[in-house]
Length: 254
Length: 376
Ligand SMILES: Nc1ncnc2c1ncn2[C@@H]1O[C@H](COP(=O)(O)OP(=O)(O)OP(=O)(O)O)[C@@H](O)[C@H]1O
Ligand SMILES: [Mg+2]
Figure 1 (cartoon, each protein chain N blue to C red):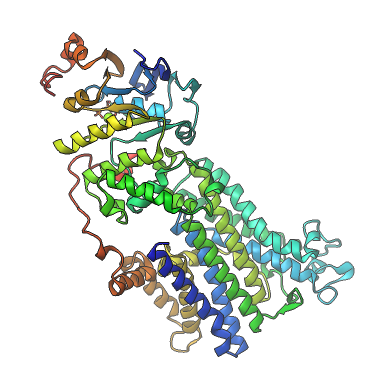
Figure 2: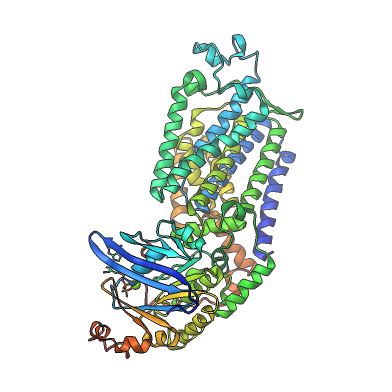
């Protein structure tokens, strides 16, 4: 299963309990380097919560998470980010008062210390780099506009560009195509395939067309547990997955 | 350099130059002293603008740093009065009255001018860093930060009043020598003190501007905007906040030292709740997200306060008038006077948003949960 033969991210028996309710219930997941893993599952399956545990937003009740061979479940959010994990949230979260350009500059965080950044100003070469990135996501005209003025679609693009600027080893994406048009979704797929060359990605998605376009291995979550794992075809055939998705039109047509 | 930055630097430069030229036109020592006082309070407002306006830390205890700076300066200048305002063994007079017979250990180093100047900055910075360490590592935010800083201010204020034997209590430290460094004497009513203060204001403004224009300053603004998101980029939010909080305390400490020079005493009111809350008002009026705006806000408000309270007609109503102006500004000018000026200059020079394509404002159809909800 692992393409490069290297286990990049490993979740072992992860349990997250909110006042007794097990949002994630013994999840074990292995993602190898350079993989683009899709996670699907019905609403409330615990997909977002699973990503939250990886990036340190939510603490574990039980289990462990290792990234590149090191335990990360006891680290603080910024330490996990420095270890090389970036996250896009389900709900748009950019810096609304800052301009698009400033957003990108904050995201470029290879140097993250306070004193390293005090009296450090943007160089021309760095600015050009960000301009190119903005061009790629179609926001080159909006560089000096506060991010709060962008449309929903543009905000989604900005969020993805933030991750490109951050350039983490592992990227966690929560429903990147939500609210996008068909063309936009297609362009997002292109971006992901490009990102896949240098990064490992975990993408939570509802849009099966999109998943088919980008996914290698798909993990299906249901009620906090891993229900199935495999290629698109294998998943579509899977009897339990079919029963979970029954009434929602089946996985193939979702 | 971006055009906006160039215009900003120019504006700051012109205003500071104007301040430095004032003594060429004013030769009344009393008025010059009054102006110097306003400028010092302008420095204090710059300090709050850095923490509140840029980082979103509403520090209601800003006067604590100011007062500590002021006491450090007063301690140095008091020991310089030996043997005039002292008793046996060179003790400050108020200690003699309080039956203290040896100089307390923490007064000893203030025999050195260099130490006093250092302490006036280092003590507020150290205290802010310590307080910030607990508050920001503990992820205390919003109104709780305001309450904690205000409470700390009150505690320090009460301690100073309570330790009358060593601090002069309610009376503060009075009858000071004049500051003398490098052979220059800074008379509170002379132009030298005014120049010193105008130069300090210039320095603090440009220093704070450099901080806000740096990458660290940008991260601070990102923290103000969406603190939680910043963490996931790998920045240690607590340390950035401690940094802003401490730099702000250092600037307030400088202002405090200068205030002792122009007032010729240090008093517990310099660490008073009233002064601390006034700083918030100055920043709100001038525009807390503009360092220069905050400084001018302080100068304008305190200047008006001075003028109104001295005039016969408004003797009884001036507090009411000031309150009214404050309410109007807060209700109608959320960015303060700086916001008004910015809006006007954008119209006149045509830079800013008008030259850009109209942002494409589409109602958020999906995922339209509120920002606050997004990262709780
Ligand atoms: N902070 C919380 N406190 C209590 N319950 C929570 C909390 N966060 C999530 N839950 C619950 O945990 C379950 C899993 O939520 P999660 O957001 O992970 O689902 P999801 O798979 O991402 O769903 P969706 O497809 O709707 O985004 C849900 O039932 C949710 O109500
Ligand atoms: Mg979700």
